[in-house]
Amino acid sequence: EITYGLERLTMYLQNVDAITKIRWNDRVSYGDVHLQGEVEQCTYNFEASNPDLLFTLFGLYEQEAQQLLERGLVLPSLDYVLKCSHTFNLLDARGVISVTERTRYIGRIRNLARRVAQLYLQQREALGFPLNKLEQSERVPV
Image (tube, rainbow, N blue to C red; front, side, top):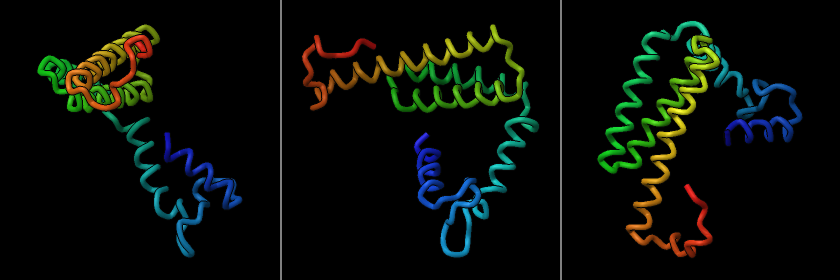
């Protein structure tokens, strides 16, 4: 994650041992700005989220990604793949997915992501964008 990396660099540059101690400005710390939100998001992720609803949402997001892919809408499809991934992470954080289910869910997300990547590549090739000037032999297979 880019933000986390920047925060770690900032901790080093400011010589502080905790992210909450990063100086946001002369009067306010990173913790002053973000700690409450972190606490609330963690409470939601690990305690307050509704697993039944999350399972339903995952299925709906997956269906939407599939129908968008069938329509050739790459970027909206990607949005729904990301929603699937986030929802899976919430379910995993709650500990409601078994090891076997975890593997299946990851496979479902990976298959959707692969389809998005393949469709994106097809669209770019069809449009002849400048970044498509690589020889066929130089391309990485999707």
